[in-house]
Image (tube, rainbow, N blue to C red; front, side):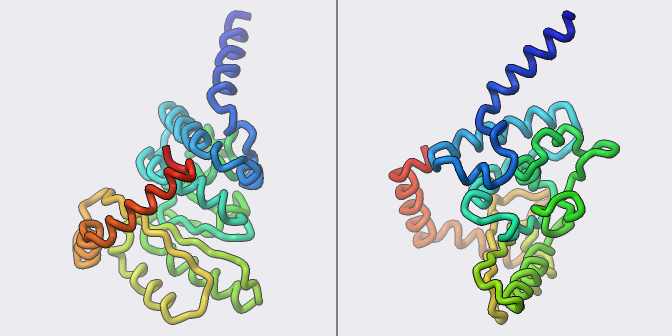
Length: 234
């Protein structure tokens, strides 16, 4: 009886900790929330990942770094009709939790549990099997071109890629083809200067120069001020 009471109390505390997250079984549930609830969703989602990975195997950094982006993408785009392609599978933990695998997330990387990377055989929200870097743009471009050929002109495809992955040759090939092909593709660069190893090369230097430029920082400041006025950023 004592152990049962402990588990019951822990369960109640978890429910209170994840008030909004407990109500999100699919991104459609997320899209029914008002925009002012999203910061709290992000807070709960971040805490959920930290709590689970404190006890189970997994990667913290990449997923925690895209919490707000993950919530925004599923809020704005009509997933799974609109498709999101993650460049590094480690950053998709928040995506998995928001797409029907919240309660199963504790089985991540365990025998018979959910997969640590996006897997189309696991969920219709997982558009492409991805582990490591640089293939998201090419994969997303293929999906976008296919949608265009099938007359699905309102179908969006989003590739999320980090600055470390942008140094891979496959990413350059994808950019080269995307610029010459009619498509409905959005490429989001998560330029956080974070990777397993230090980024090198011309692309890294270009992005660094861009970040330090007066024009870029002026635009960034104006967008930040606009979001503050809308109450999106606190």
